[in-house]
Length: 226
Ligand code: CA
Image 1 (cartoon, rainbow, N blue to C red):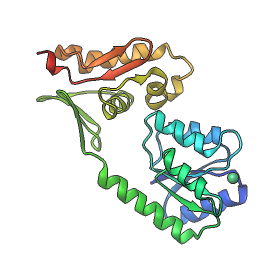
Image 2 (cartoon, helix red, strand yellow):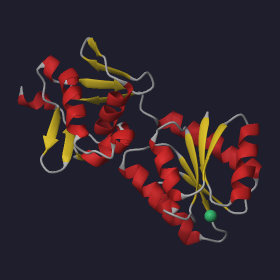
Image 3 (cartoon, rainbow, N blue to C red):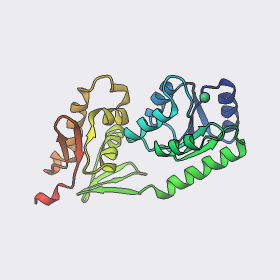
Image 4 (tube, helix red, strand yellow):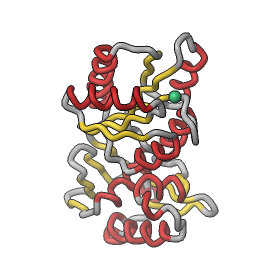
């Protein structure tokens, strides 16, 4: 299991690396908020340990931005001692749990294990929007009776749209979520979505992946028009 640790205090970051590696996790380190934000966007992590007081972009901003982009990776925030306000704000911006510094490594590891358990227990096995269904664990997309072959990135884009079914998802959020290395060029999203639309809609004479003018896209149950 791969963990991203975003912590600017070098000694603490390295201790976390050593302790968590000893627990069997693969650990990557980021030393400021911007680097952390970019690394988390790769979607390669099962968990993020996020210090809130960071140079560059603070942890609250990272947290809020990931969630806006549809990144649902569990986040454990590291807060200052006695910071009721910090802790409440961390949870409000999308962290799943927090631990006040200084903390015990045993408690940290137990909290991380609990987070993983909680997330796997509540994750819906299948997301369904209209006739489209997404098996999240198996990364399989289906139309009734047919498997729709998608690339991993297309699946990620469709998953974000399905999690926010009926709501507009901005082009930027979609790019950062599914094609982060192409996020420098927002025009690419149209080509990507059009390819996705051919596979999930056009081939079945459906119109579930809709363009929201000036904003982005939205996935809807299009069976009502039948
Ligand atoms: Ca710090």
